[in-house]
Image 1 (spheres, rainbow, N blue to C red):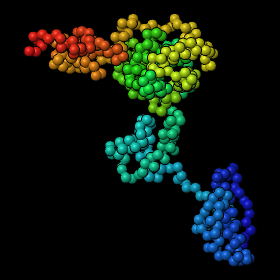
Image 2 (image 1 turned 60 degrees about the vertical axis):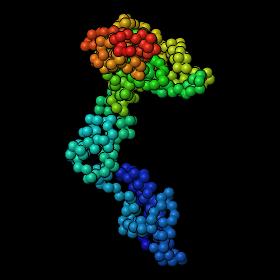
Image 3 (image 1 turned 135 degrees about the horizontal axis):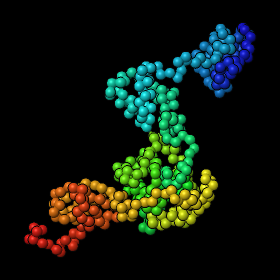
Image 4 (image 1 turned 180 degrees about the vertical axis):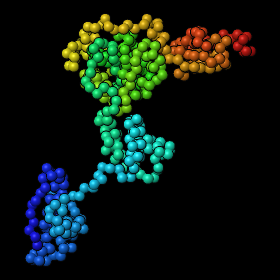
Length: 430
């Protein structure tokens, strides 16, 4: 029997440490079997018996089958230690089930729509006839995307960067040049009647000064919540040049686009999986959680109004007055230092009217329209007509009624009890 030597290929020859470790484990198993199956061994085991016994043992953390150990045994006798090295596939990392043309199609669509689910993407290509269904598996597609860095994990980590938003550290030179907007889940408060209320915090942050133009907690996360925050921010801090949001449903409403267009605000959105580009407001939220919300454990609040009152006190009394680590100045001082460059908000009446939500309604036969489950009474002349209702969802006591782009009236809430006391002949009541 030949003498066994410890020739171990070095990393400089292109052999990984993992391959070396596995080869050494195989070598140890082969040595053990060779000794037991030797004619000079008193046990007198056959090769089959020795490999079967070796398969029950661990070799440097590896366990091999009897057939594999026998194959290693003969490979070593024929080719020395290098024959025990794991053999890597020459086409490793390549998608053999997908032709180069199909790979190019998949990657081009993936690059164009990085936020689209892979299964939806593949279904679209199969339905349009660009890919032939049944000739490949989704595992092949996932491996292809992973090899090119466009899989879901890589996208979330930000490794795919065709044009995903800000890629470098930046700061606008003046206040109100850029506001970042976002929403985070706030604390759950227990009201006086014992009910639990889940809250959400909508907030904006000025990129230059790190000042929060406005922020408030709500019991829901509708677009009306964010529009209320934006209204107060513009009313008190001026009009920003640019508003940067993510692709949340709240920030995709048509009303926001109309308001921004009327005020000359450029609306910009982060690409899918690029929410990290709004890192400044994310950092603000972490500070809110650590400095403000953490104190609610010791002194709980029991209403939304109380929560917002305390938040406003913390925001103006502490956050805006403390030196910000990134700028070296308190946000309030940095914001006011360049107040001359701030574009003022329109007059209150004009701004309020601009933020009114607009919906089309058909006037009922009883001369009423419904808005958010509430009924408003209109002039009987509008029965059966289609009108535009303009309203503030936070103050639904009255709404504006427009017909054919002309203001008609202010409609008040329907009072059925009052109407029951004042019937007239034209009401068709006997």
